[in-house]
Length: 240
Image 1 (cartoon, rainbow, N blue to C red):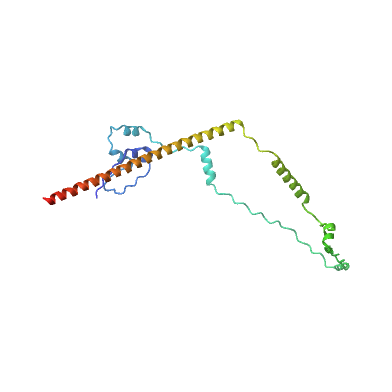
Image 2: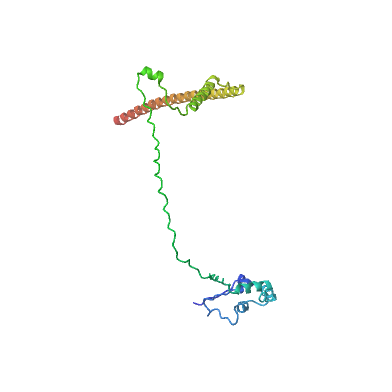
């Protein structure tokens, strides 16, 4: 299938033209020379964009400063390998002449280690069982831990409870009383109004029910009269 290749205007920017362009179907896009020239060949010479592009000077390679060149040369130089340190040659070692070596004297026998005195554990004091009265009067526990703190906590809690119990409840301020009375009055007024409305609706319902009863009675009387007239008409027809 033949494909029509169209190049949009944003592709004609110099930043995009410098890049490589891959052509998937070169048969439909015949080009001769560099790709930018062939791309610009399909554009009319009178276009402003093409004229501005032609006015741009071609920028050559960038000139490197001497500092840049030095840094590049230093980077390209091979790294210096460290030299191994030469081993220090020592002089000939003179061996001592063989002679009678003095015998090592055996150290005196170590004195027998004194047996370590074991700490004897004192047996716990055994409580002497006595009668209940004697126990209550004489027995005192050996160690009482945290007794003062518990006593102080109990005292503080008792004092707080006593302070709370003794202080009377706060009396409401007159403003609060006025607000409360106004709210109660409004509530009572609304209740009375609703009660009156309920009574009026009940009376209306009763009147409506009475009217319905009266209309039903009238309907019954009318139906009875009609039935009589029908029966009389049938008798008259039969007599003829």
